[in-house]
Length: 242
Image 1 (cartoon, rainbow, N blue to C red):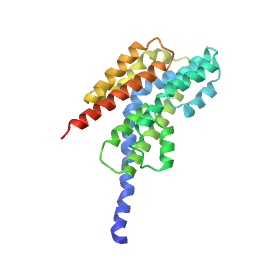
Image 2 (cartoon, one colour):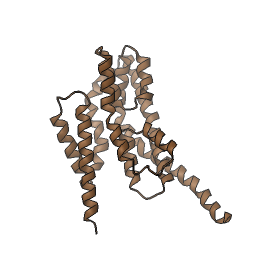
Image 3 (cartoon, rainbow, N blue to C red):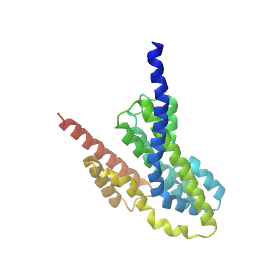
Image 4 (tube, one colour):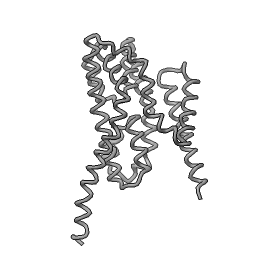
């Protein structure tokens, strides 16, 4: 019995290393797409009254939209509003976590805790795609960690560059117009799938209707509606299969 299990044990570790590398490689194009956003966030931190505190926030508020909204509210002198805004914008992460519940049900507790802390828009997209692909729970775990850690380190590095460029008076603020275009990196691949197209249409429609709502409220509702439509479409598609 030992001789039959040992080769499997020996081949499992290199395979997991390969999954880590694949996850990291999948994260790199997303980092490139998010580079303008990261530089804008870095510039906002550089112009903030407490830039060191803003930079520390990179590691505690990983979501760029939540960090940027919080900094803007703090600059306006409303600490309570800033805290509420950050929580509201990041409330969408609870929806992402809920969507991964079945995929991560068999994962160890430590991974569910760490994975939830690193779960943001791009890492969720990678985890959700990998969950549908063949492989073991260990393979999916290694793939996600490789992607999520790469995203975190790359994101923090690009924001730090934006802090120094923003401090030196560079034209980083002009990149603000490019921030919405960063979402194309996540949205474009979804348009190839019918369920993804309906999800994008639903979320975009709600976003237009909720343009005048308080910061973060429209985003949360758009994500909830998009996720609901996408889930319903997948159930209809699964039920139609023989």
